[in-house]
Image 1 (spheres, rainbow, N blue to C red):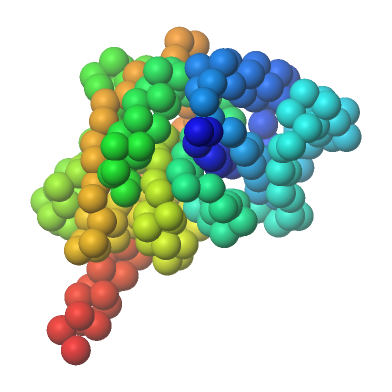
Image 2: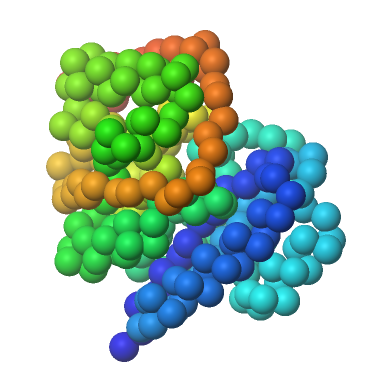
Length: 241
């Protein structure tokens, strides 16, 4: 019996040739997950480049069943993922970045945990991952992990790894998030951790070689962290009522 899996790739202004990586990694997953029916969702988050007709034609020719969702204004990764998740119908949903930064073995381990009955799988990164980050991102990532652990009192402090999976129960919680940009992951994991009916699992993942990371400003992190704190305060107030 085949397993239905929705795989989501949010994309914004990708580098030239990104479609080659998407197709090649998808084909590798088809071989690796031979008993799975993989439904690919590519979300164009208001890109100004990278979605020319020749690019989308190449993807469609090689993955005929692909779903390419597009809109003209950039909203952020969280918005893009909710756009796709709302259209998903499979029992299991995984999302990662379009350059497939984590090994396929890491993705397989996420899927295996979902198949064992875990509702939401959170991936965690090791020292080798942080050694690959630009200094500013490494510093901010450590800061966010500290806030998660000590300010938000979360059991899972590493919320920002760009690979996660969830089932239909987890999908419901994911669609309840509202942050559109970077810290949507934090909001999702926070809500999942505080949902009494969800089983959360954590699994270490490994980075592929030669993966590059963009640099973000501290203002983005701080603004969104405040939004999560306000959201958590409001939810606790509702629960007391």
